[in-house]
Length: 611
Ligand code: GLU
Image 1 (cartoon, rainbow, N blue to C red):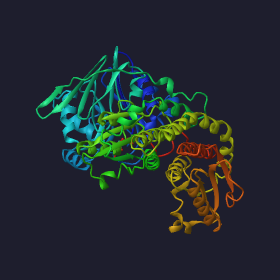
Image 2: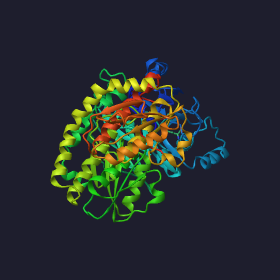
Image 3: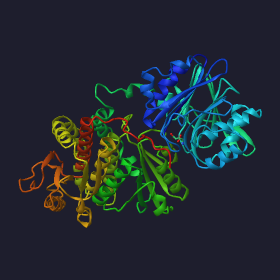
Image 4: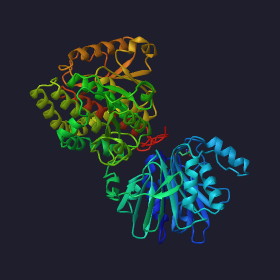
């Protein structure tokens, strides 16, 4: 989490640094800061709580004047409250060195105690501040900035990406990474270090992501990468790639919010996924048809993994293990007979990366399903399946979840065809259904969105919700509840409809509402009926139920349902994608009517790069 930008140039870099950090606000936004090193080597900082883009709008950084060296940060607090003094950059006790950090220094208590013993005074509660003091102590003892960072890095435990500048070695910025992303780029007359290529692409046309253990030193027009070794530092040879500016993709295109724009991009994303070659789908599950397939992800990506589990059961009669990546190492030992599919929008999700590294180290094959090409997950993986969703700016995943589930369907279709679970004609029929899906999703976005909006607005005062479903509708319910609570700040709990009566139903009263996700009336007739039975159990106890389900439901079916949104089902696994989109729209409209922070809900960040 958190965004970092460091920039050096032959001329003023403050404006571009501000643009860069604003482009990374999706990574954390509880507080922000920017520091500059002026030509007279004096260090100045502006930092505060709140949003960096609003600060930029009110020209909060103008007081810093012009400077050829700047570092900036937008924070997602892990250690220390959200306050001005805990905002980054953190400055060393002598006021000459400043650092902006992403990640967690796990041994910060120990390092802090040692520094306190040496008489260093701390001004914040963060784990980060130790880095500023350590680098500054080394510079004071005669090291260059690069040598000071190289000497500091082995002292730090945990995961980090950070940038440092110092009046003791002006005109340069040094960056280092371990398990948190850091990219570097350069162009004529300046260079940038940042946590995402998005900020690099604003001003540079060449760049790369650093590797774990790298230290980078940037100067105007130059960037050198080093690896820290026991006997010193060595220059590393790395390949620079062309960076495409993604600035054009970060406009709202007339929509009110990125969330609205990105839900409307779902049809195009599905169309792009259909263009991925079938051979890639076959390769993505590894060469051994008998290997145990495991799928993991965190947050929404885990629910996509769970949907994949159901899709594989249906289309390929294969039990795949789906487990959230933060818990997977506690239940799964990988070996050469395993194949892991890791799902992450950013490809930088810490927990998912850890599972991928663990699987790899244990001899398993790994496939990355990431939206950012060349991400850390891509680099760990044997096979990379691109999510093809394009830049997703809203902190909530919408089109990327649609992409992940569409990919899961394609993977399961190929496996099902290969192992004889799907006949050629069933495979072809599903392929046609996927081809039709963009059109159907467009229909939902145009014809059904007003109805979903009406329901979302009408019930926005309800404080407690259950979201329930069976079969594929169960992970749909979990994901839709997550989306709803993330953006509306209203309590919603997703659960299997059948589980409800085993305890949870005791909460039902006339203030506790339920949303039921109903499967196809024909293709899933049995699940349809039992979900209706669960709905009756709730309404019999005074609970009110809203439902999303197939068109053609009868009056009897709808007994006990106070609002029904009928979707144009294809009567196959792609219906789950229709439901996901409907759930996203419901969450969106309800939250808009409550005036919530849609694209940057409180306490969240898009790319969860800490444990
Ligand atoms: N651990 C640091 C802090 O709490 C950095 C958090 C981040 O990655 O945003 O300030």
